[in-house]
Image 1 (cartoon, rainbow, N blue to C red):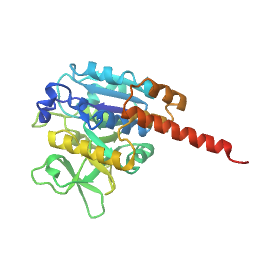
Image 2: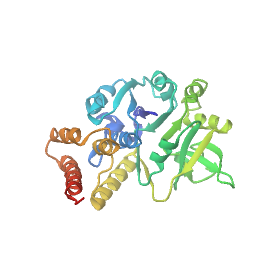
Image 3: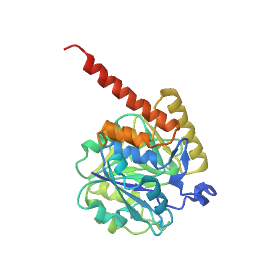
Image 4: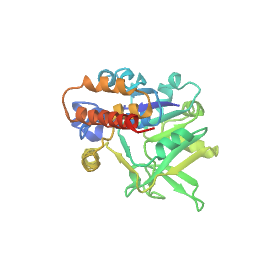
Length: 299
């Protein structure tokens, strides 16, 4: 499984913040926004990731993320000359995708809680898998309607009169058919290649799986000024309450086995003195204590 991190778009809903930096480079509490979806991919076991952004923004992403080797992954970059829809990602990155499955995640989406996403990535075989999350404002998103048996019945993109309160979050799993499906799309009235049309094609082929995310799961779209503030407040609350960090690629890479403990500690040592380094140092110390206790246990 490979991954695409979509970090394009104009970020017009965040104006004038986006006069300074791309939307996905904005801070969400103590980390750049892009760290959060990147961490989801790493935690899901994905090591080959393609970042898509505008020509002006790509150098900034390269400067921030590098080639990914510091996290034991490989990052490639592709430019989106014009923002023409989420599904355009499959045309831009067709050579990167190749013939295997692909996970597409939006750079302004944050996820927290449960094991639904990692499990879906591990279990994915073919077709398409998307997710459904209950929201109060479904008209702002793609919406899925279920039949009496809990199967997906219809999909709509930002409908005026939604048929359900289940929105489709910005993470999608597809098999190799997705590139051909994207090539066959026609631009919508908005002039975009709609991701909903991709999902509808899989639904027509009876190859679409829709997984409902539980109440204990949190999904935040940080694409507007209000939602950006709410996302930062959510992250701050969770981190202060639970003593963990969300959107931490170093920790995800360590726990996934992409980095050895020695590599992880070397990475942390090169960081400046800050709360982020203190947190990672604490993780290392905890693992060392655990290893020491195991060694000292009597046979």
